[in-house]
Each structure stands twice: as structure tokens, then as C-alpha cells.
Image (cartoon, rainbow, N blue to C red; front, side):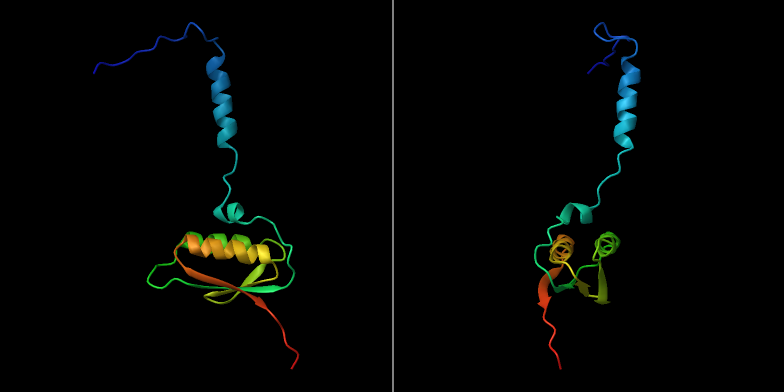
Length: 120
């Protein structure tokens, strides 16, 4: 195989073409990348209540990115908190579902439960 050479400027391009391409590349690279948590959260909170998402990473090492993305979901109003290492509590069905899909994506077994408080 021989080497290919392209003479610059190309006959169909203008002299400013490379500047336009460079500016487009710069503009695209400055766009922030969406996190996995943002992709999984649909913002659909039609069902009110409190929710628990239980997960178990049995035999699988928990990824650092899982904790980062779970923290991003906890920051979305109404938020969420870890009750213990494998139980996530939130006031949003949408966040509970997104956190379930997130944990499953990283290899965990998951379940989501609605909390019903009982007066004692």
C-alpha cells in the first residue's frame, strides 16, 4: 500500500474552510456530556409517595461510577438518601426507577418498594 497525499487547498474548498471546521469541532467539544444518571432519569413523577430501592451487588465489585451517578440522582429534587449501603430512599417514583435501572446496569439485583407508613 502506498501513501496517499492530498494537496491543500482542495479545489472545491475555500481558504477559510479549515477555520470553519476547527470552530465546529471546538463548539462540539465544549458541549458537556450527559451522565448515565441523566440519561436514565425521565423526570416522570406521576405517582406520589415514598420509595425504597433495594439492591445487591453479590459477587460484583461496586463501580465508583455507580456511586457518582447515584449521588447525581440524590441531588435531583426531591432527592434521595442512602439508609444503609444497599437501600436508597426517595420521595419520587421516577428517581426510584432511575436508580433501579442504574444499579441493574452495573450488575446488581434490584427491587423497588412503595413505603406505606402505619400509625402506631
